[in-house]
Length: 493
Image (cartoon, rainbow, N blue to C red; front, top):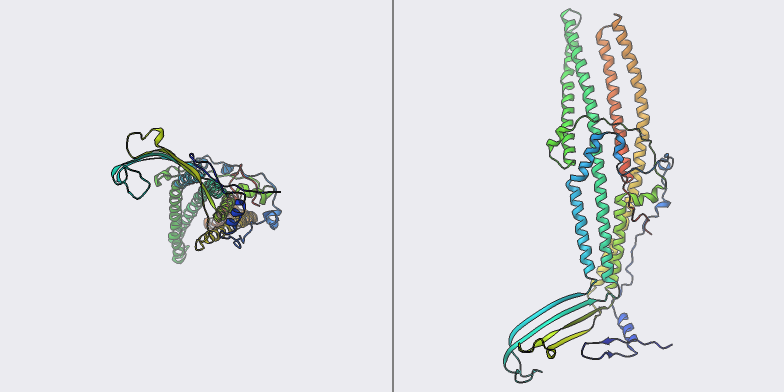
């Protein structure tokens, strides 16, 4: 079998110039003379997430469907839904994320432009003295005259080794990163709003209990004063009761402060000033959703959790940056040309006699660059390793968060059951004290004291319910907030 390779340098005025059948060997020699990328390889590999040990907490969780995009609506509170929707529309972080997408798209367009031909026009006119020692003939040689030129220039990087295309594809992956990051901002804003709202609901309940506790204490002090006046009590007992009053009042003041701060926080999350918090009324939260996990958790999580999706696209982008960096080690071939008119005077400038032009390839061969290309490839390879390990860490963090939230939900359910039993016992004691008081078998103080125990258990229940509601929100966040990467759901290989 005979092989040959012909490299033609052409112009629009001259026939092709052929290097001959040995040009194939010449190209091979040129390639061998290029700087080598040998020995620069990635060290990291993406996790095989389907092989990870999930643990009993995840494996034994009841099966449920994936959360919907508007998962917070399971709390059945119209005001919460309004606040979340407003946050997802007006918050500056979301607008910044949108601008970041626009920036990445513009950079992708810029990278794409480098893969296309570049055409431009050039017009020049200058008064010059032409040398007598060059190719300029008389009568122009040795005299001043006009040198006029009008051309259309063209250049096109043939991108034989896909250097420009790989950079362009990497920039497209960066667009996907920005889009996934915007989804992550959305679920983080939603989670922050929901958790603040849950805390607001708890503070309102604590305020009611603190007010009842303060009223009972004041009632008890009034009884103690009357008993002291009747000689049935001591100043010591009265002073002990009065000493509790400032703490009970401060407790109520602190709760009022917490209400203001939470409303300010939610107003900011809504993209508005603190005044918007004044219109927030008492929440009416109710959650009856079953606790569990969707099927095929690790695999589906890769396409549903935005931070994992973003990390995956960073890996893809880094991989293409490596391909682009490797292509820089090979000869670069550009197609250059121009066509136009040139004349040493204005007369006849645009005539056929003034026509000029050229078209042909230009090759640049990297032979020695002081290690620049190897350093660039090493840097891109290190960035790839970092992106892979970030992807791996994000998956591990997601599974950890899911397991943690399930553990919290299981623990708080058991604690709530215990507290509920304690509440039933204290309420029973309070009912007996009330019955004895009405029957004249005990005084009012005993009834007030047993009610204090009831209030303490109710405060604990409020805290446990807040923990349950927030843990559910945390689980939804860990599952990706119902956001689906519909276009790309396959895991990285």
